[in-house]
Image (cartoon, rainbow, N blue to C red; front, side):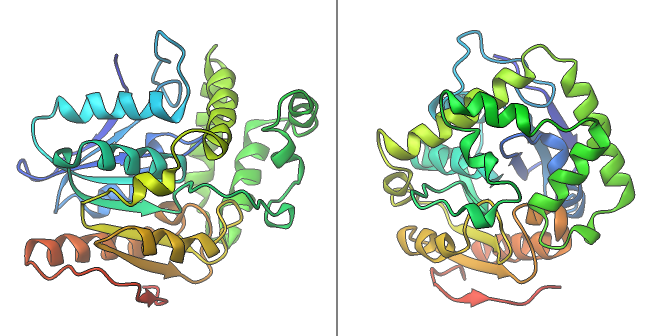
Length: 294
């Protein structure tokens, strides 16, 4: 197994590993990894089939398959890391922390893809997005949602994932469009996105619940959620914290699904604060909701 990564130089004795969400890549963490570079050496991974990582030989796109790949990657590093994940990547990071607690120093979850059996069509920009994950009719829905060019697709993604789309900088939009164009040339890209999305939804309905895994996490955990998240309902934030011992919640007003991109300063400040508190032995579980944003 080989994963493509993006590295941010930092202290030799502290490692942070960043995991992107569905349809994302290692570039989603550029700003936060840069802000935390004085605190930790950063490694942002492309999960199998995403970014520039080839899919696994088994073509296993299930959450378990992705978790196995990340777990093997972390096990080879030889020491625990600060693990951060967004959306689907948050669910994968949580799973790894539950299975192998000795590999995770702290855990940060940004709008993790927690099971939600009550999806609300009003919370997505196009209700066909929900149909796109279903067998049969999903192919029709995806065809109807085709975006003509990479720039339009980047802008559509911002409208969906940001609480305030105007916060997206021009150079990040250009980078996203360039990445979409590059991904379109990879033979496995479409397959990876579609099958991973379907497998994620299936995992919400069958097998061990991610909620049960969350209850087994031992690492100090920071849960970050935007109150304008259109993809993962903010109502899931409190439940997530309630089942994870050693966790705290940071709710960011006006922010959407990808807080690490939309509000990197606030996220980096909160993460650094957690690291300091854990190091000083001052991190205590609490359901306190911090509604401030720097």
